[in-house]
Image (cartoon, rainbow, N blue to C red):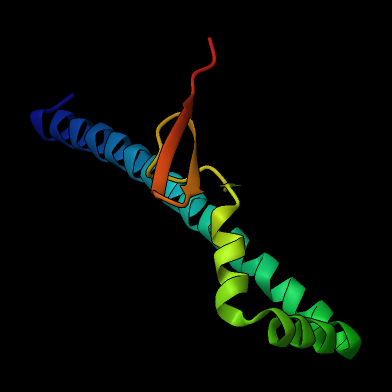
Length: 110
């Protein structure tokens, strides 16, 4: 095998390795984007369901008018929420929303 052929073979191996790393990185990025869009998809599904049932929409507007938007917002903010795993959390962490602010809860499995 000539020096040129060895050089080309080495270059090919390096490019294949680099390509594999880039594919893996791209796959993780796509998974991250998809996980972020899950909430938006749910919101769209809920909005479509509400639009199909105007009675539910009228009831929600009536509830907001009866309770008041500020008090309703306060009531929902005081309730602890567990959201989906976020890229900001490591491992099996979940973000929680508390009255004092956002906290991180990490679950370590064996």
